[in-house]
Amino acid sequence: MSGLRVIPTRRQGQERLYVCGTDGRNVAWYDREAGRVNLLSEDLRQEVLDALAPFLTGPVAVGPPPVPTPAELARLSLHPDDDLAPNRPGEALVIALDRDPGPARRLRPDPRHRALAAEQAVGEALDRLEGAGWRTLHSVPLPGGDRIHHLLIGPGGLFAVRSLYARRQRILVADPMVTVGRREPRPLLRRVRADASRASYVLTAEVHPALVLLEPARLEITVPPGEIRVLQDTDVPGLARLGGMLKPADVEALHAMARDRHTWLRV
Image (spheres, rainbow, N blue to C red):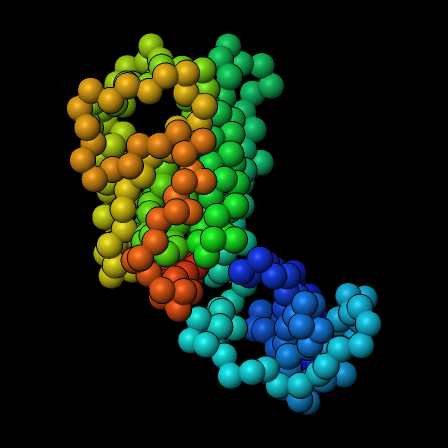
């Protein structure tokens, strides 16, 4: 086999380098922290080592991998094009802006830039929960062109998170309406609930809806939104304290299922 490529990833806070064949399948991976190259085929030993040569630091052990967990097996069998885990916060908006940046001169700022700022800031805050055993997927595509901004999976359960740009603006929540500044109220909480409902159906697990506001000047809730968590971006680190719902193996299994693009075709 020729044309092997090396793809760096981070999993559970550890860096791994996966070696993929021309068909996108993983044939090996290099665990830097363990100093080990795990081969899925002994026949490809030399080709794998040649591909990894620029990345190897010091002596390494080379051999078959330890018995993989079900989540690891799912990861190894997943084609890179179908893996949602590498998605950046706001991935869909980044692509949309690259394809259609809009006119150079506008009377009003493109609202997509504010939406992207919200998704990036909230997504980065969610990613920082990884050290507490949480996993986050961003820009999860749904049929019909919809998407879930962020899917958070961890010891405290699953959350479908929607980001909202609210910098220096007053936010009024009167379920299901959300008012940003002086704009017209929108039934945004219906969308938040719909995201969670669709995720629950796909993953066959309870998914909690959440709305995270980026830097609001003031938040007022006149009609409580029931089961929806309405948070400010500064509240996100507090989610790390939630627990007692999922074991680490359950978190990994759900994350392995959710990261597969084909999983979301069923909703």
